[in-house]
Image 1: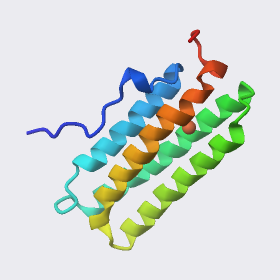
Image 2: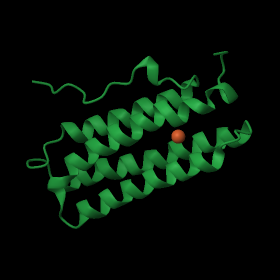
Image 3: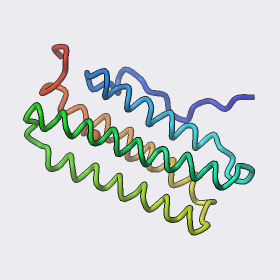
Image 4: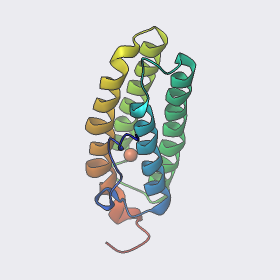
Amino acid sequence: MTTPDFVTWDTNMSVGIDVLDDDHRRLIDMFNGLLRTNVATRGKDDLKALLTGLRDYTDVHFSREEGMMREHGYPDLETHLAAHRYFIDEIAKLHDEFESGHAMMLRIDLILLLKEWLIEHIQTTDVRYRPYMAETAV
Ligand SMILES: [Fe+2]
């Protein structure tokens, strides 16, 4: 039996730039992968690798997104960068908590971070740069 994805990327999450939409899809997939994982039965090393993968891809994505915002002279860059820093800190905290053996909280923390931060961020903060850098007219 396959578990359904916790959240599915939808066109209402599109920021109008394919490469960034692809990044967002991939980050959501990584969260879904972690949430599908049974913390009780999966080896700690496997979970750690998934978490590290999420952290690393977040860095790749944020660098790309921030670079594009700079390139297009996006006016509200500083606020956006602060939001990214918050997310990076939360992922780092999750990583540290997991390292120090608090694996049981991982699922709840991941759900909160996915739904209340990532999805919310894409739909309210990322969409604001759309008119400045979308390839197609909105
Ligand atoms: Fe962003």
